[in-house]
Length: 189
Image 1 (cartoon, rainbow, N blue to C red):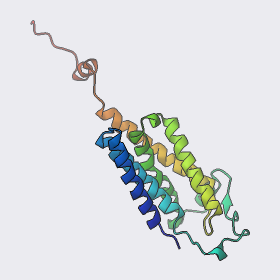
Image 2 (cartoon, rainbow, N blue to C red; image 1 turned 60 degrees about the vertical axis):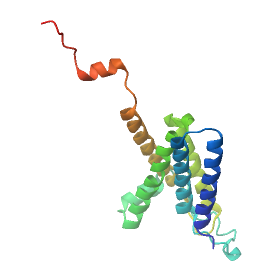
Image 3 (cartoon, helix red, strand yellow; image 1 turned 90 degrees about the vertical axis):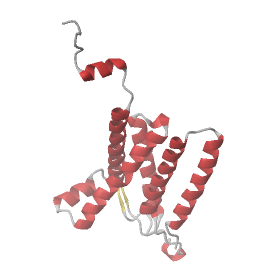
Image 4 (cartoon, rainbow, N blue to C red; image 1 turned 30 degrees about the vertical axis):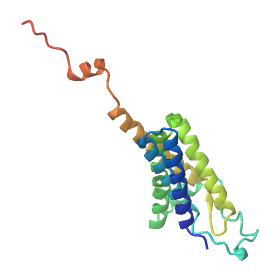
């Protein structure tokens, strides 16, 4: 059985390679740190959603594949809400959102071309679709379009947090500083 340790080892190798290549290209340490944090966020997402992964060939039978798929948008969520949320279902709903919040925050922070909301959301949805596709063919996994919706919503929350923080720490112009302090007082009086 493969475990998430393989993902951790692979992510560590990618980060070491990125630090070496980033320093060779004169990237700043904060940029390197943000991109390494992004790699950790993706590794966490992959670890939580795909592992443990059984490599037992007896489990890989075609009739088990594609048997646990849900393609009706909001169908699973609607059913869960209609019949009352169990603790495990609530944890799954909240977990699907929370899992992608760091990704939605770190992607625009680490990659300048992803600082538009639609770019971040398309990348997050693409990653979620990739994971759900892998879950469709892996034994003992389920695929649900609601997971893509919830994951993308989590990335949107992370992006909003990024925008809020970026807006609060951005440098202000002299005009903005004067308007924040109020009207100028006259020294002639």
